[in-house]
Length: 346
Length: 253
Image (tube, rainbow over the protein chains, first blue to last red):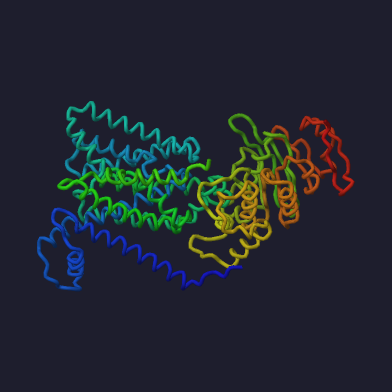
């Protein structure tokens, strides 16, 4: 009989893991803030932070402080939360659908978002990025409702949900193409498509407040669900036999991931591969139990996304690549390695 | 009664898969569920475990009406071992067995001594304590089946339903598993194909045909040459075994 690990030891271990994780995220954000046309040393960023907190009163160049506070810090923090949210949603989708290829957009959310954004843009309701985001969010949630109704109407099941998601993606992609091709303003439509490729340009503190509260709420809620997700390991029937109300839990988790994903997509576009690849990578290191997988995926997703954002600003001098391009550039080789690792023994 | 069903009917479309089945199972009894493929054994087990809602009829377990009882309350006393339950997650054996404690733990409760004891007892009884850290994907079919049974035992059930549990097992493990289940102080209902196993290990048998109960009773009452001809379409001679008191079925060439 193995004695249960003492509670104090456990709490200490969890606290240490949280501390290490947060330091890692803080470190990459610190680097991210320093990268750009105006390089800023890490020490300056740190001083700016302690100054703002009122702990220190170090003399800094105003231009540095302005760049940190008005542009780069909020951008990097948004990137971190988006990465965390996408990886978290991906991990949940993979477990819930029991499919290693599942990712946050599998329920048609990014396709719906693009339709919504394009429709708003072309129909000319409101102006600017705010209404674009509202349209994208509405489209994303519309797609989710479509899938939820379709898959529940045919009595759930992971395969049917995936099929419903594929159907929704096709439908909304077709709708987007229809709007784009029939609209007189093709240039505007292309702008929207480019926006949907993903970019952290233009996100500031209000966006951070929104994404931080949604992802924060999502993470806490998902941790409460962690044990339920473990119960799904052997399928819906086995989960039900263990006492889980499968339909209810599944719908709640889908809604939660849809909320997180739709918020992210409507803010920074549909950035691919983070939600697909990061949870797989994390499983290699810490295994499939969700009480560890979910927080670890969030941290890894945050770090990966901030690094991708740094790379998007450094790869081509004088130009910022869409971050979705960078995540895919890094993601595809990584994913290939996973496929190779899981090759069937011959 | 431990498990009781009254006129239970369950359909897919218009076809009745389970058709007006009534059974009563006493506490501690080992009931064998026999019948050809597609006779409704698996569907009946799912209905009894509360995983499907019958279109007609009523099922009670320990006096609780399944229709009005919460899933988690059912799972605290009813364990179900499916025929094919696989996962692509690289779980350890111990993680799978620990899943059995799921219905007993509330949202925020930690891992208790009771949980630990139930898991250790289940590992011991099924003889898999030595492979607790083995990964699911590395197990043989028979080992996987034993892990599922250990998971079910970790649920500390009062009723245990098994759907063809001996399917992937070698002869030794078939016998030891059925002996284990028949000796457990729980009510068990086992869907089986092997009629000799049914005669050896079950207190009572139910034979299903096309969703209905063809016959029910003790192995001596149920296993007759006529029944085998009518339900299973095989010729056989049945006689008490010379080596144990139970019946033995000889299939004719």
